[in-house]
Image 1 (tube, rainbow, N blue to C red):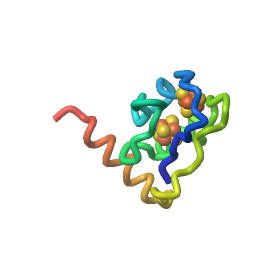
Image 2 (image 1 turned 45 degrees about the horizontal axis):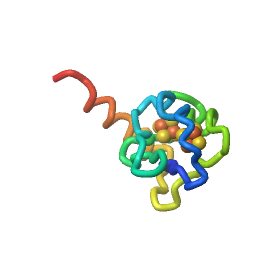
Image 3 (image 1 turned 45 degrees about the vertical axis):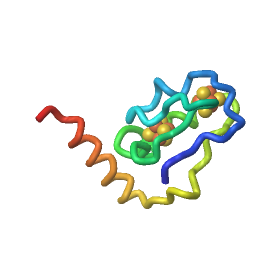
Image 4 (image 1 turned 30 degrees about the vertical axis):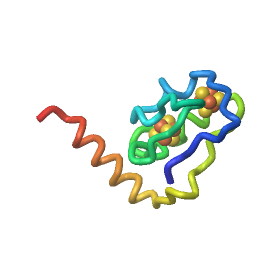
Amino acid sequence: MALMITDDCINCDVCEPECPNEAIFLGPLIYQIHPDKCTECVGHFDEPQCQQVCPVACIPVDPQHRESRDELQAKYDRLQAASRPA
Ligand code: SF4
Ligand code: SF4
């Protein structure tokens, strides 16, 4: 599953640099997670890094983007292939 940031976010900025997929960005009001880039940290870490650092625990799984571990791994593989120099 991709994760999402709820409106409890206090814009503390600590999660954005922790994301290995650059999936976190500052939206109009609060930080947001791009679902096409979030692998729940599969391929990089055992635990979602953003959840580990968020001081207000406002990063749950996104019910709109439920994915199996295999699907997350495939997303990771796609992201890696896209980031390789041609
Ligand atoms: S779970 Fe991992 S990949 Fe997804 S937004 Fe958080 S840090 Fe980024
Ligand atoms: S760590 Fe949590 S509170 Fe801080 S910017 Fe990220 S989502 Fe918002």
